[in-house]
Length: 113
Image 1 (cartoon, one colour):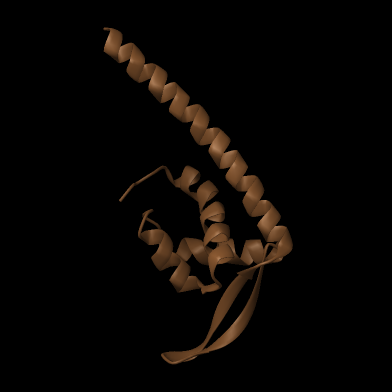
Image 2: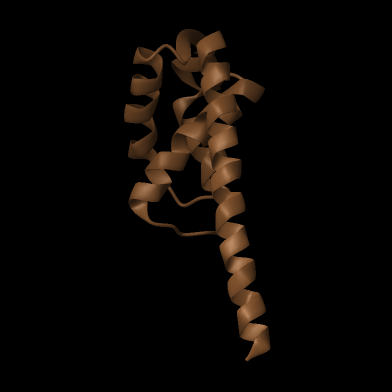
């Protein structure tokens, strides 16, 4: 499992949430479980993010009955959320492409020594 800087992690969690919810409506803890398979996160970091994304109009929520207890609050992506997700994916790809180019130059330089 990858461990990364906290500020950087907060920046990419929005993208992760929007991508996951665009695939399938999810409740908060389910999102934590899915993201935690790849990135080390605390459960408490997701709920403020979900509230903000809902307030910004990128997600909407609804209650759904649960066999394990009280109804769960599920989140689904909205049309503005899909646009934001696509914009964030483009930014992420440009960023990682730039970082990878720097890394490759560094590796090529190491090979010349």
